[in-house]
Amino acid sequence: MTVGQAVSPVSAADAAILTVDGVDLLAWAGAAAGGVVTRAERTSGGNRCEGWRVDAAVRGAGTRELFLRFMPKPPPGIEPYNVRREAAVYAALRGSDVPAPELIALHPDLYAMLTVRAPGRAEFRRLKDDAEKAAIARDCMQALAALHRLDARALGIAALGPVGSVTEAVRAELDLWRALYEESGTADPLIEFGFAWLYANLPQVTDQAVLVHGDAGPGNFLFEDGRMTALLDWELSHLGDAMEDLAWFTMRCVMEPVPDVPARIRDYEAAAGTAADLQRIRYHRAFVSLRIVIIRHRNVTGEPGNSVVSRGLNRRLVIDAIAEASGHAVPTIDRVPDPPGARTEFYDYVLDAMSAIAARSDDGQVVARAKNAAKMTKYLREVDRIGDTVARRERAALEALLGGPVA
Image 1 (cartoon, one colour):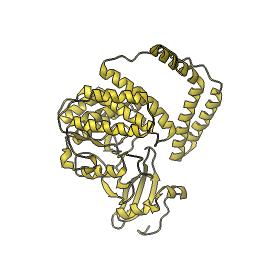
Image 2: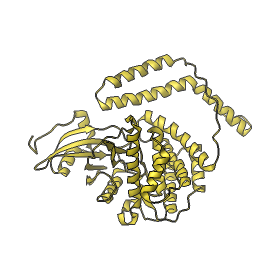
Image 3: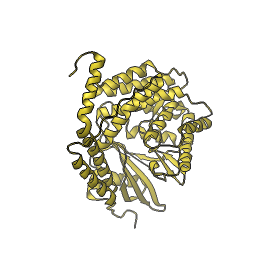
Image 4: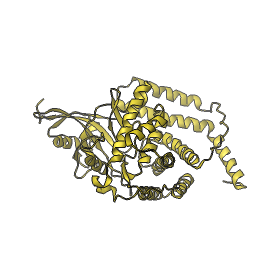
């Protein structure tokens, strides 16, 4: 085709998604790349951000493979994490040894940016070869070590604030997440307990804070031919403790397992030339999961099925992390009896139908929606089956602890 020719690379519905506040983001992306968009394909994943694989025809340069990432709505309330901040991090990392996508353009008004599209795929959990998984995870550790070697002051990322000590940076993050929690206006006992423990056990580290990825691990990197190609999703990056990124990595391994995680920590030590502080990793395991609990508590983003799974999982992980860091054993509780509920057969029928839809569709968005709806249906099935029993047990435990009846 001829550069400049009118193109309709997406459906009318997708075109509506790609128009934000009257701005055609495909037209902007094509112009920013020096050509015209010839293809756009929506990707799955992410909570608040839309991601699109974009091809642009550029006169004299052929096709450029790009990635468009944008937030349809500005971040809520006081939350500072957004695409514009992420773009500033990408710009600062340009030319470094950290494998991050190259920033092409940031929209002057909207929360939208355009980067070079890194090769590879993100579906780490689908890999079957443990040796391949270990090699890719080793690359991730080397990339994190390279990131933590950078001088945060020299990077000059104004959006992240002044560079102080590790302790000052972690305290600042605690204060921010406490404010985000309080902004919801709804109290949560587990979150209150988590903050009390985190403030009381704040690591005392006078070393200068480093730039941390803030969500590193399986699912947030690309890989190809047995090697990691890029670290993605820097939205939560901030100044902090290098051990936090190792905590994120181990937490994300809960959902997408990596062979021999202790060996991967040793890979990081070899690449960084310094020993990992396991107690600080344990501390940050609690903070990492508390962040996710607060995100779900604020309930402003994410598919509901994914949110239910993430909220339940990370509430448990907060407790596990604090218990491990404090030297306490989490008590074992008896398994809840699991006979079929009055509507189990109905829920199972719906789940079979959703599975059939996902198996027969070639539309990635249809598959993603079906899987999300299936998670919600499974949750409703369990509420129907054991919800009353769980509520009675919890009330009995509270009454035994407090010495009297509770509502």
